[in-house]
Image 1 (cartoon, rainbow, N blue to C red):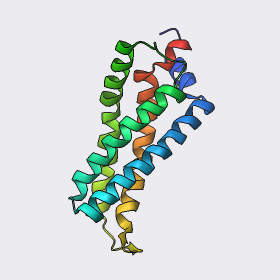
Image 2: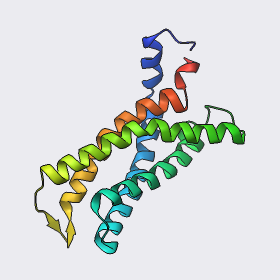
Image 3: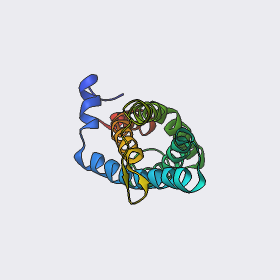
Image 4: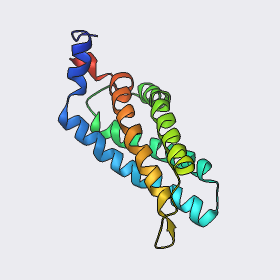
Length: 155
C-alpha cells in the first residue's frame, strides 16, 4: 500500500464520485435481485430464503460486470486472468455483504413479520429485502473497494 496507513484507506473510500457510481450500480443490482426474488416466490412458489440467495447471486454477477466496466474502470489490469481474479475476489469479498443481507432479511421477514400485502404481493418481503440490501451494500462498498479493486493502492 502506498497510502498513509488507516488514513490512506479512509481517503480511498471517501470518493463521492466512486461511491455514487457504486450506489447507482447497487440500485440496478437491487432491482434485479428483488425482481428475481418476487418472481421466484410469487410465481414459482420457491421458499423465500432460497429465492433470496438466487436473487443475490444474480445481482452479484450483474453488479460486478457494471462495476468492472464503469465504477472501477480505471483500477486493475484488463487481461483475462486479472478479470477472473477480480470476479473471484468479488464473490469472496461480497460474502460479508451476502451474509449481512441474508441475516437481516431472515430476521425481519421471519422474526419481525408483519402481514402486509400490496397489489397481491407480499410487501413485507420487499421491506425485509430492502433493509438487507441497504446494510449489505455498505459492507460491500468497503470490502469491494479495498480488496477487489484495491483503490487504496493509488492513494
